[in-house]
Amino acid sequence: MQFDAQNKTKGKNETFLQGILILMFSQIIIKIMGLVQSLYLTNRNGFGDKGNAIYMGSYQIYALLLSVSSIGIPTAISKLVSERIAIGDNNGAHKIFKVAMITFGMIGILGTLLLFFGADAISRYWIEIPESKHSLMILAPAVFFVSIASVFRGYFSGMQKMRATANSQSIEQFLKTIFTIIFVEMAAFYTMNNTTYMAAMATVATSFSILLGFVYLFKFYIDERKYISIVNINYSEKKGESIRKIVKTILWLSIPISLTAILTSVIKLVDSFTVVKILKPILGEEVAKAKYGILSAKADILATLPLSLNVAFTTALVPAISAANAKDDDKTINKRISLSLLLCLIIGLPCTVRNVCVFKRNFNAFISICF
Image (cartoon, rainbow, N blue to C red; front, side):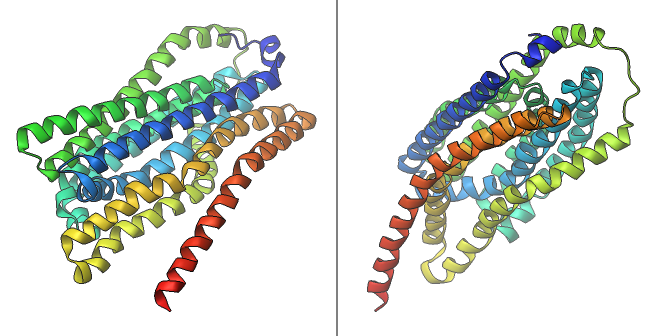
């Protein structure tokens, strides 16, 4: 791994395209493995839609924190790191990484404590699925590991090492699918298909896979650290920004970037708060939970598939444009933006046409039933 000036200017477009392809392939693998996991849980005797309601009800709370840490923080850090590396300030880039690691490590610990000790209130009064209490408590440590893993991903993306992010996410989802099947089968065997314990063990699989995904990132950092140290020697020591200014800049950048992801998670969170509560007086508690399980574990996965592919463009485009902007390379900026827009249209337009057709068909069916 070399980060000297010559290597940074050589094959810039190739690196950018390779990063997009690596991330897109990773997202496809993640969705396929997620679909396998969902199909298994939905069709597993004793789990089904009720188990999905318990599992997804707790997961949506965690997903709100995940949306902030997996999108806003890495994107902000990758932007700042890529700008420093583009102008040769590798020491400044590494300082941003260290400050972000401490800052969001503390935030992650706070989020873990809030989720762990608030699990009972959230499960009883917010989502009204008391069985999800243990799932929330099991997920709590994952908040910390996701927070610091997001810093690693932002740092490596800023250095245009997209493989680290792609591999860690793919490994995490692959292991989550495998461990979910193993742990749920163990719970089914020892508890005679008790849905609550099976859902809790599915959550254990999620937390364990997140931990191992973080371990991969940490190992990647250890393996690359010696090269980072060598590069730092090649540049003169510069007076860097204050820690307070770095934290303020990261937060200033990450909060607006996170708004879209937060709104998406809030919408799903509103579903988890309201669907069971509204349907329970009409259909009964068990049927209401099953209907929520269908919505959260089946419909949402298919609906968000096209959006997941855009993560590749976001992750690769931000550091690439930031690096070019730091060197006033407007030509490269325009080329990369144009290419990204073209690929997004190629992917998005067929999905839009398909969704419009499905909506029209469902709307006509709804009208025929009502009238």
